[in-house]
Amino acid sequence: MNDTSLVQLLSSHRMLGTLPENEIGWVATHGVLRHLEQGAVLTSKGGQVEGLHVVLNGHLTIHVDQGAGPRKIMEWRGGDVTGLMPYSRLVAPPGDVIAEESTKVITVYRDHMKAMIRECPELTAILVHVMIDRARHFTSSFLHDEKLVSLGKLAAGLAHELNNPVSAIARSAGTLSKTSAGADDMARTLGSFPISAEQNAVLEKARNACLSEQTHSVLSALQQEEREDSISAWLKNHGAEIAMAEALAETDLTFDMLNQLAESMKGPVLNAALGWIAADSTTHRLTSEIQTAASKIHDLVAAIKGFTEMDRATVPEPVDIKQGLANTLVVLRSKAKSKSVELSVNLEKDLPSVNGFGSELNQVWANLIDNALDAVSDGGRVELKARREGNTVVVEIIDDGPGVPPEIQNRIYDPFFTTKPVGKGTGLGLDIVRRLLQRHNGQIELDSQPGRTEFRVLLPFIKDQPE
Image (cartoon, rainbow, N blue to C red; front, side, top):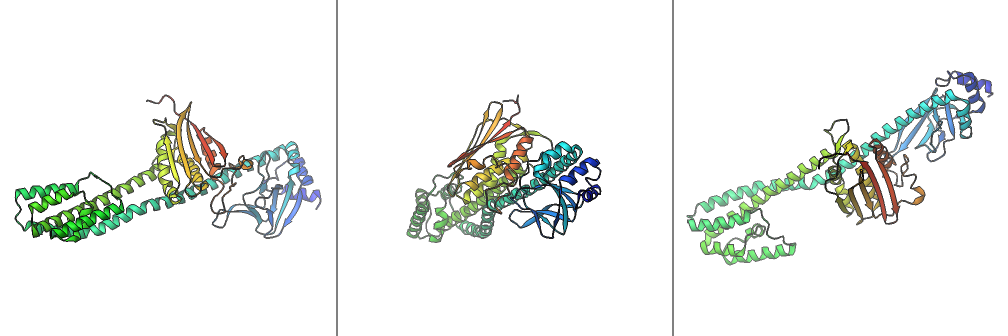
């Protein structure tokens, strides 16, 4: 097709048709008409973008696979432009650009871009606006995706952390109904015997020792078994039921107290008194377990609420870095436990607040700490430090993983660049970290070698804060 025919096609193009004749003529002279059959790949993921593509007709789409299968993120039809834009640093697309139907494009190859910028100022202005809109679309789309990934990790971590206290509540509550009924029966049995004031004083002393909130000793499994055997032998020697040995072994009841009870009470009265103490102690212990587990759930929910900052305003405000880091660690603690990673935390006392958005900074900490946990092997070590340095708050995340090779250190903040397997990483975490820190007038630095990788985040703090 000759240049005259290309000029006619370009003159009817929705985006380029309003250009001056000389600029349309320049594109027609330097552009190449290409026919793409359905299913043809215009540019493959990882391949170099050839140049500017002016879509005359048809339908182009780009799909990105983040582990759950390819997903369409953008599309172009007749009247659109795509590919390399003026002043763009784009080298490779994040996914394959595919013709969904028979498509015609005019391609101005990369070698002509500098001349196009010089010779076609109005076309350049149009394309710069297209590039800005495209960057805005990609940023908002993938920031949303990365937030969903973070939400998934948050939900998984929360479910794991909630499992233990919820199971403890269910288990203890199920047992409590039986033991409380047993305690009532024992109380009625004991009440049927005449108890003197002296006997009652000894009984109350033993019971109070069992219900004390103070734990005098923590026994190993072997020591606990030996204590239970000893109490069983004592009960047998004094004609009492040995079935209550396990419950009594869980308390701080001493053998001196048992001997005092045996001296004060005999036979059925002693058995009833010990049964009441055992049942009452078990009821108290189960109630305490339920209370502790419920407090754990309350603390977890408070940490999640603090992590998401869901009740905060949409304007910058003072952000407590220490609290944000603490909430983030709660969210990621289950992942560290699953890999037996040693987490070391050293946060300087009285860190000043920074001005910004708590939820966004928490996403920064979550991405960096999560990356560190991914980098280390099972049984590895991750250190988290925060301190004041000059006019900034410095947060350091250090891991003992294999490190970031020098040849890719300048690419780790590029969108879609990742060293993780498909489905394990989006390649957007560090790009979003960088963008969020720029929004907070902060910066991020990397120092990496095998066995030690350190990310340093520097944020200006609010001056003139009260001590």
